[in-house]
Length: 444
Image (cartoon, rainbow, N blue to C red; front, side, top):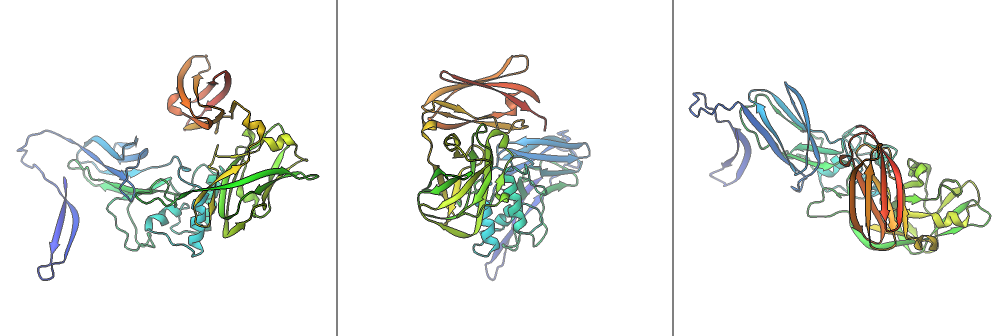
């Protein structure tokens, strides 16, 4: 079976058009005498800009059952399939939902809903429709926020990527659901190799095109920095986060690290920025982290000296509580968005106590985990760091040594480095410093 392009030309006007179809070449008289009763099916896995998409999970259904397989090179191939059987090929991207999804996507969806900005293509609508109801509403914003804050681990009615037949053309650019499109290929009776089952897709939730940006990058990272300071308020159970520069804000997100041994952090309350409980995520509170994701319907003008928000405690916080506070990217990226939807970096003045540290290490997050867990650590200078993983019997099953830069670093442990679900011990060594911790891997 071969794919061909058919062209039609009007002899009077010279106008042309074309379409794609297939030609099946059969050997009914067995002249070729190949004796081959199997065939292969495959194709490309690409973005709307023809970029290859890696780590795609595919599903092949047939009379013999279903096969699920991962492909990493922007293409897939199922080999040695019996000729004559029916087949159905589709993607099942039920993984890495948070990849490329941030509060900036919420900002862009909100501005689209309010009519302040329009989406550039039908693919943006598909990316924004995280609830899978064929429309873009505030429900999509709520679903993305729950994902960013760690309240939900996946979208309830959608996959992490949406793939369509690659040659599909949207008849209406601002309504991709104007007609039904196919998200799978169906073969009624396989007669030979079919290597053109190409899929084209976008990351669901990633309206800012972080993962499918092509030649044009929409999520622009500026060189601007939002400088802030932290200060105790005499006689009150709160710490103020104060702006040290002027900026117009549309939204922001960050991971807030605090000391679990200090005063109890109850939450964040509004000042210039109207933060509500729905903007907070407490999933990692046991690890000493509070997540925040906020956006406004209107830009908020921030002046130097304005209190952005307050951290609320159960009692008057101490200087040690103040020293322990960090706004960082340990779990979600610490970033703000200005009036041009540019990404602005956070800079909360670090305490002298933290600056004097040579080594500081957090806990693995998440833990337990099924696919991967991440460990954040701080080193005061460029140095070699090694880590080893042991099973319950004390046998070393994985070890690695690597050079890391000065400052904050991240170490990712993948499930492929372990022997399977169970309890393990991770040992991290940096110079004269050593830290050991427990890892718990659970099944998918």
